[in-house]
Length: 523
Image (cartoon, rainbow, N blue to C red):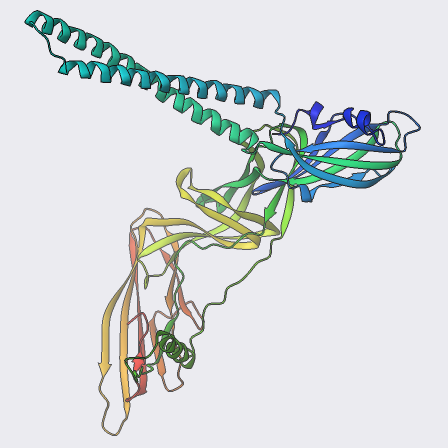
């Protein structure tokens, strides 16, 4: 899509002949010096050398042609610090694109294939006409049996020939259609779809010396990069091998040869593999009173919203992150058009502590969790990652990291299960002279290791949170949790191979007798 460098920046003679006011300065080929790639765009920086036609000229024009995907509003032009030239004006207009040889060859091949397709389609139509002709002959009247036999033989013979030729053409047509699609895809990948480029006319003044330098930059679409990661967990050595590659592509129509390539990383987003514990809320029920069957939907919605506010329920806050980025420089590279290239960013070993995380109130599965603490903060943008344990791939998912600490999950183990069994769920009647209601829950948590190696296990259970001071809760555990806060109980268990351990936990609730209670999701 870029013009040939001889046409990318060039001197035009015709304006001088017809206008005679401004002399177009001769220039050397432009060179892509540096490219900063974003996920779906890039900032391209180029330089050119200007050669004045004569020492007496103090006003000149230079033509710069940008690729169709370029944003003309983003064009910034500056002379080098050693130049004593000034940029007086920049005028941009669309022009017909002139392709490089490789792109032109692709277009020529595509045009040839399209012509072949049209020729085959014409032949198919001609064969259809012949088929209709011989089908019409079946209704012709014959005078003798011999004449009928000859006609029948002619119809059969010609029909077989026509259908055979038609089948051959259909086969060739399928091949041509496939070839056209491949050529069109290759052309789009290499040069995009637009037939127009951008021509910028730059008016200069001042003293232009030999080999004066102009620097210019612009943003361009049709190119980008994405991170590709590999995280291999090595529990036996308490480490994770982290590999980071970058897949780069561009369709500007011209190769970037030995250009300094930078990769702009976006602010990473934290992700979590296992399901989060939901809050266990116990609160008084709010009665819904329907005053009229003709109440409008908006009034009902307002009533429900008021009830939610009255019960103290708040919507989950949403965070908006403005785009910030850091830049990785991968050195000078040649990035060809069309094809995707993979570059190595870095590979390093992270220290990690491994344990299994289970949330039996949600699932009996136990997830392998690696807790990492790095010496220096890192910024790793969100991208596709392959997760591996001891050389065996377990799957792919998005990964991102910002800072020095993170919990990374490597899927669940079929050998480690943690089940939760309800052994009691009782409601108590109010006693004499006591205006109270009670309810008791009891669970048996059983952790089982069916594997051949000992593991460390973290078990998390939700803490019920009352939303009314009249609701009293009492907890009993055997054994006591290793950690506890307002939202969860945590047990840290060392589980030997082929062994199991049990935890008993219970919750007792006491509230006014006449209080209707919503017992939450875990009843």
